[in-house]
Length: 256
Ligand code: SF4
Ligand code: SF4
Ligand code: FES
Image (cartoon, rainbow, N blue to C red; front, side, top):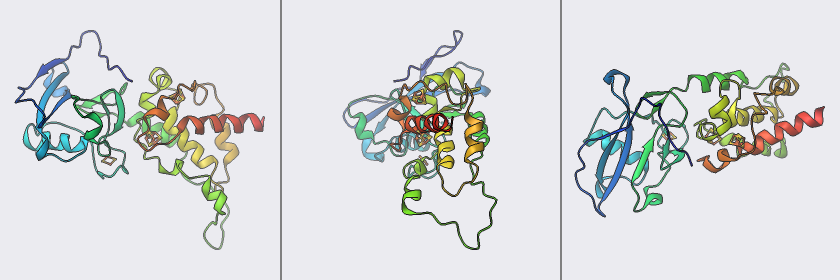
C-alpha cells in the first residue's frame, strides 16, 4: 500500500551479515537510522530461527533486540493491542506489531519500516509530537458544566453510539496511511483525531457538541478527507474512521 521513499541525497544501504535461510528461518529486513551515526538510513537483514521466536511480528523484533542487535529501537508496551505504541509499517501496510501474526507472511520476507511520512527519531520510532498536539486540540475529554448528584447515566442506545469508536488506541496507523494527511498534516487533523473528535460529539454526556462542530467546520481540519479509505483498510482494530468523518460532515450539513 505504501511506498517508502527517502530524500534524494539519502540512499538505503543493506548491511548485517545474513546467517542462513530456509523453512526454519524467518528473514527480516528492518529500517535503521540513527542521527548520532551521521550515516544514511540502511536496511539490516536478519534470519531468525522460527522455533526460538514467538508468533507475532513484535516477537521477531524482540528476538533481534535480545540476541542480535540490542541497539534496535522501537516502541512497545502492552503487547496486547491496547496501548497503540508498536505501530509500524510491515510489508507495505501500517499495523500493530504485537497483534500481527507471522503466519500472515508465510514464505515472505518481513519488511519493517517506521510509520510513513513521519519524522524518524531512531529506527522504528517516529516523532508523534504533532499528532498528539492535534489530538489535544479537539479537547478529548467530556465537557459538562452541570453537577449531577450521582454519576452521569446513559441509555443503552446512547452508550451504543460509542461502540467501536471507543476501541481506538490512537496508534496513528490510519492517519499515517492517509494521502491527505501526508500532504496536509500541518492543518488537516487526519482520521485518527477526527474519529476521536466524533467520539465526543456523539457522547450524550458531553454538553459542548455545538462548540466541537464549530471548531471542525473549517476547510482544512475536516474537509481534506477525500474518502480514499486507506484508513479503514489499515486500522488494526477494525475501525472505520472514514465513516466517523462522514458523520461529522453530515451533522454539519443538518445543522446548517
Ligand atoms: S482508528 Fe484505528 S488505526 Fe486509527 S488510531 Fe484508532 S486504532 Fe489506530
Ligand atoms: S477516507 Fe479520508 S481520512 Fe481515510 S484515508 Fe481517505 S482521505 Fe484519509
Ligand atoms: S505493544 Fe501495545 S499495542 Fe502493541
